[in-house]
Image (cartoon, helix red, strand yellow):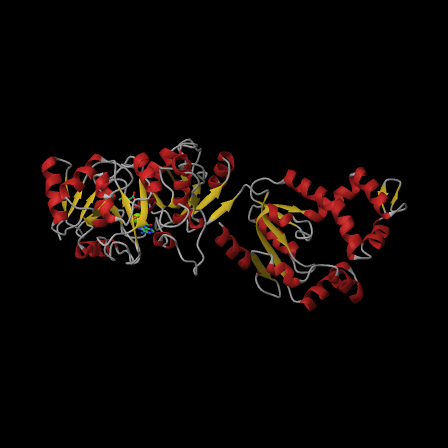
Length: 522
Ligand code: TXA
Ligand code: MG
């Protein structure tokens, strides 16, 4: 098929309207993104949209109208809340879902009994729909799964040869698709955030909810309120990872990465290959540029992309919602004090793992040495210990470790009392020492509750007899002493169940396992 590239001239719009009327497909600009239109009342025409996009047939389309009066025939009823939203936001970047009328076929609605309606503000879109003389079903004009096109050249890239015509109307004003809200249930729910924000909608109709899938990934067995939310979306070929960090932390992080690209804000000081998407604290500019930036990264051949995190307030939510899907929900959180918590039962080989992280350039904090320092230098702690466990434990300002061990490790309860004094001090010192990608080597990570301060927790473990042998040899303990020490710890199962990753050290290659883990995290 030869695709006509049209201009927004009156004669071209008239021609495009005629193509739609006759059951053809026309891509056209709107204020959000380019749409791929067909006559919504012609099921055969609508089917062609799914084919041209490679779109799953259960993902319903938005029906676009040119005049507010054209809504009533498409829906069962315009409820008072729907009317209020129409009065406030039509024409504009809002799509309203209502129970559908008999006019709407099952192809348009993806088999649902509701219909999504929108009246674009863009003049070219409005003139085209009016010229077609029918409601126009139109998803974004991209190949399914790719970022929505916000400029004509990406519509041409995806649709040339697959549809009848493309109207080149320049760049889209907003750059992200419309806000989708359903009024078909009891409470209004935003299914997709856009330029019309939750706050703007609530000012008109009161409380609305935001569907969980907007900001989080969906489990495989969850039913999506909006079928579009379940598909991997806006995905460039490159693997995108969102980096949750301040400007400086982000810059330091990406500038230390090799073979990666940055998707950052205009003023970020980044010296690896980069594409920018708008300015910090300016959601509108980010929205306008995000999809084009994602496509440019592919054009540059990016394989790995670290993206700056746009917040989630106001329009930022729309940007975040698209970006987190482009990233397949992968986020690196540098806002946690510790990037990785490294723990595991005694004798498992934590020390070796820690050394390897250090060789890779991580800032590794050894909690045991912090504990030792604190016992040696923190006089307040020593008097608190004396108070708790009796005189004689501290002599001339020096801790008698044997006596403390006898008093504190005699029961779980007394151990917990000692931990409550020591752990907060250790964590505080480690937080002070944390800088960049920090690994917290902490045998008692879980006992101290420090896992919440780690982005990811890695435990290293080994079979019990191997650990037993290691600690008897290493620390010169008898079998009984070693067993006693092991039994005072958490079970191996506990470590495994509460960690994000497990390293096994029964002769397996630790470095290879760590490389794999880092490949997954980074
Ligand atoms: O800004 C926009 O809305 C653009 C322009 C062209 O108008 N259109 C657009 O359409 O983004 P599309 O098909 O790419 O996205 C429509 C979204 C999908 O996630 C779809 O699942 C959802 O709206 N949707 C449509 N009808 C629905 C319905 N009846 N119930 C629930 N979700 C619906
Ligand atoms: Mg789309």
